Amino acid sequence: MVQVVALIGVAASSFTITVLSAALPDIADDLNSSTGTVTWVIAGPLLAFAVFTPMAGKLGDLYGHRRMYLLGFAGAAVMSFVTAAAPNAGFLIGARIVAQAFSSSTGPSALALMMQAFPDAKRTSVAGVWSAVLAASPALGVVIGGPLIDATSWRTLFILQGTGMAVAVIAASRVLPDSERRDDLTFDLLGGLFLAAGIAAILIPLNRATSLGWTHPLGVGGLLSAPALLIAFAWWERRTPHPLIELAVLRERNVALPLVSQLFLNGPYMAGLVITSLMLGADSTFAYTTTAISLLILPRPIMFALGAWIAGWFVERFGARPVVVLGCTGIAGGLFLVGVGAVTTQIGFVIAGVGLAGAGSGVARPPIIAALTDAVGDRDLGVGTGMLNMAGQIGAAAGISLLSALVTDESTPNRFRVVFVIAAAVALVAIGTAGAIRFTRDLATPKPTPSPTAPYSATIER
Image (cartoon, rainbow, N blue to C red; front, side):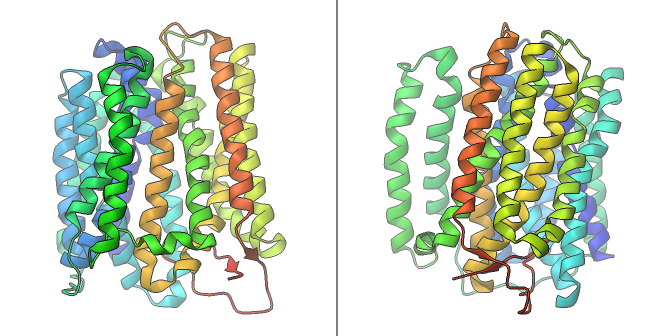
């Protein structure tokens, strides 16, 4: 029952991402905003997730995972209803960022509670169900949300999400057990503030450079202050007794390389989703409705789920490195196919491209996650997974910001093609970084217990 209740919340928090991407053109029209601005409806929450996930993990350790789960979903539910009433794009983006800041505490806490409810021998199946829900929930959001938005408004989507989260809070308050509090840790608030300010100082100017110009005070001030803020973060983390992130662990090869690979994988992958939706929208050559766009990009989450499911089978037979290279190549190839569809206006290439990119992402991620969690060990598992999530979300926010800045309301098919070729080239960089991780497939020795965040395990050659 604990697993069912925890997964209700996971599904409620993640099911909007695909259909929301498809609705971006409608949101821009309804709020009299530009496509470059409304992309921050996706990029802003990704940034918030990147910043607050490590902080949320520490708060869960300090105050208990049940408490953080309830607080996170209660706050996210309220902010979902607030989002539905947004009068303009700025308010919408701000509400989404606050909602995601609350939601960032729910993922680690829900997973920790699920793992505590099952013996070690069941962790693989628990993680498999977790991954399936994360992949299937956005697909369900497409089936329900697309027609609902066309029949009513995009605002209905957030009312539905808030209702689902409220149900999760009520169920969790009755079912989820209390977890142990740790009094030997303190929360690194100053480190979190330095990190948040440094990342925002980089990403916000990058997103606004096209419309405001690179010499605008916002851009110049942000890019000049970012290095100082990140240096201050590193200085503080070395001196505080309970840092937000253990910087020393970044020197390990099987920690640094997975983090870098996440940047180059998630950036073009998430940017490709947003830009595909803009390309298919009402103001483009294709001119599809929100429902049609949702259904056309539905192969992405479906193939992601399938790719993650078969990744373990491939790793056992061929080793982790070939699987990772195959997955990265699939992401790049899928983005290239979408670019071909843009310039030829053949929707078949677009469908094949989003499906191939989804499958590639699903195949590549489990071995990378397993490599990092094995490298940091159980003692630093929360720090390691927090950093991995942060790197992936920073990459996604940066990718959406940079590549969306190249797209305007009057973008031609050729402009979209160029953007997708750039995204594919960035994804190819991940082949070198992820492929350099020290994987091995020693099937003669017992496999370590899979980590809570990795459905499939890869043995690491230290």
